[in-house]
Length: 423
Image (cartoon, rainbow, N blue to C red; front, top):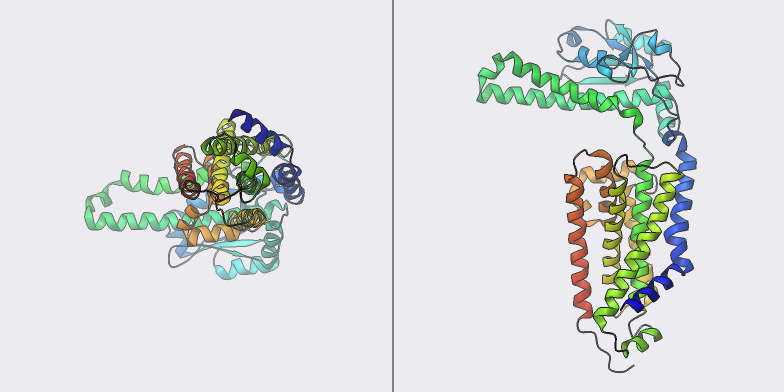
């Protein structure tokens, strides 16, 4: 078995197609994406306070948390003049200052400031209790260009402010719901000033905490993770080809190996081990390139990122084994299926530049991700990037283990009774 393992490993690493699709292609793709969108990823984009009017009317003044929220992310006139190449401007509570506040008595006055170009947007309080950010035509154009790869600091500040306003509205609804439930179930809480202060304070504290580190977020890392996931799934083709080459009805080599004294289980074990190691080594090279050259990192969790590559590689190899075990499909068709499988599933990871589509599918049909191995591989890396706890990472590992077990079961079902009338 070990001799077969060594031969299979050498054969895989000497195959030009394997080296191209699993090393050269992801490296080239990652370099191109970094070159096109590298301005954002390199950290050259710095949030710069934008002039924003605040409609201080009756609805605004009667709102409990609106002023506190706005003051946390606003800068004074002197602070807002700092250029984007200088130190980051911060507001109260240590959050990044996203805008320079200019008060307006009503919506009409704020609209006039907007048309005169004195402000790029204005914040107002709706009757429903929601914050609303209204943009000028110029700001809307700048934001559209910035989302396509621009580096306008004020546009990024407005994008961030809009996102935080949405979070404020969502959390305010949660607070309102909690108060309504307390009124129905335990009215004494409504007279408990400490409980009310904690409820309202936690709302702003969580939003401020998320905003305070936003400048350090690397938007490009999602694209690189999607490339890693696609490349890992490409290993299906290698495993499929290796197993098919050992089947007597699909390959002359398989006919010779079938009459050798080496057991079928040992042959399959050699294929799995060699394909996994070859995949792991290729992905390590790709990851090292992304880490050292492109600067993609998992701060403090580099070792777990390597473990994620090993786990994803094992899952892809199991899927390749299940596909390669099908006896009635030719080798060429199997290769085509595995490549198409990898490329189509990568659509839902945002690989082709449409992260918004991938996110919308995730929100609309969250259960669909558990059927998509490419999405689960990207989740492995997201769990390391965006969660302090390792519980989400362990959960994703469990999903991938279940996928691997199902694939191995399907392969075993196909291979257990394979026999040939003649060779």
